[in-house]
Length: 295
Image 1 (tube, rainbow, N blue to C red):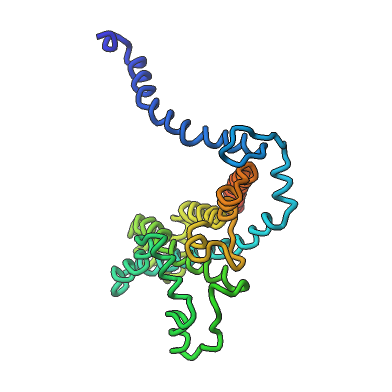
Image 2 (cartoon, rainbow, N blue to C red):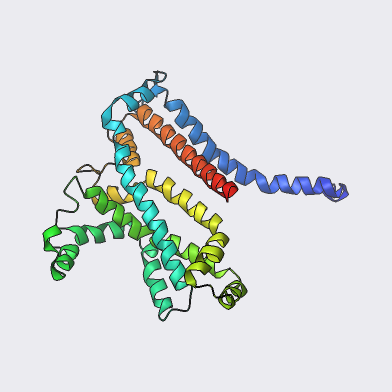
């Protein structure tokens, strides 16, 4: 009764606050509070279970950057970084082709998107068999006369990260592809009809109609792909457990925390990863904004 006597603006504010209380409480509890604790732990030496934590200041951060054991994992991220560009380019290429009236396009859409439906653990075991000696990949190479390039794909430290990055490209290609395809199919067909009347071929239609129309989506997918390449965890964890030089940043952080019980150092690594992802995202947004101004 009292609520109905309040003004419309007051009722609106009360309803908004009421609906926001639970989401904000969950966000604070499971989002910002763990982040605050992570930041606090990064300045301490702690084994994860004792009540006493020794304050060490910036020593955890200094240790990370001064010891090659922890810092060299960034080299492995470069393989996934290159793979993210290949993944985005292939997804854009296939989406551009299958957005047209190609024979059997629904079948090929399903084939490309299918890996996105599979569990990461299943994909890891599939590619373990695929890359093993005399496995599927070696059999295919022998069948086409390329047995001379056969290697121990996930045992050789020189090419193991290439194999794992290729697995990630196959795993996430379908997700990028379906987003690009949806964006392309939202472009009005009248644009292409007008371009065809003017004599524009498929490449010019893509260059002057398709790409400018989905440029924002391309930027978003590039940001997600590059950020994901820094946070790779599932593929190397399942297939190699970080062995043979395939350790990634997140895998190293997990090992530091749960196996070495250096929670303070692992927390510092988590904060460093957060800063890197934020900086990469801001840098990409700035580069895209600069290109748009120049255009």
